[in-house]
Image 1: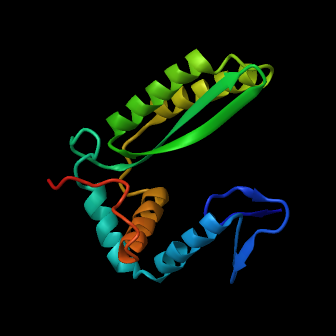
Image 2 (image 1 turned 90 degrees about the vertical axis):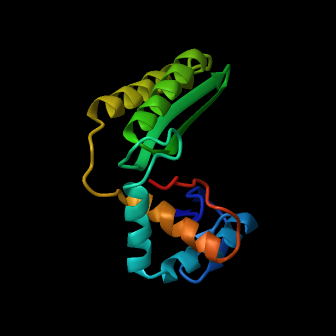
Length: 171
């Protein structure tokens, strides 16, 4: 089965194709132009911006870095509907752990209410948050996720598609 190059969702039938990439909708197809522009950016330009962000101030608390991408996990349920997700947070380690703690609390409050998946996914997502908080360690280099986010933001900015999703205050 194919997956969308923009959003990652599974494409069962149809979809839109541009070159090697396949997209699930017209909206994702439009995002494909940003992906193409991102591929064309020089690696040295992207790397310089990534290191500038990595060594900069946190966009959330303006504390010192290193700045990276931190994942937090969330689930909510209502009777027969359960939704679980992974949220990406760009910031310092402290802000990443704060987001994990908030999502764990949210999951504990709102995750149990669906049967049977709420009862299954809630301990999984809470456990993932707690595990990530305990093993959270200082990396010496920026992650591949941060590099990809910066690359896409630079491409979107070059195409005039709006301001970056996060701005890093100068030191």
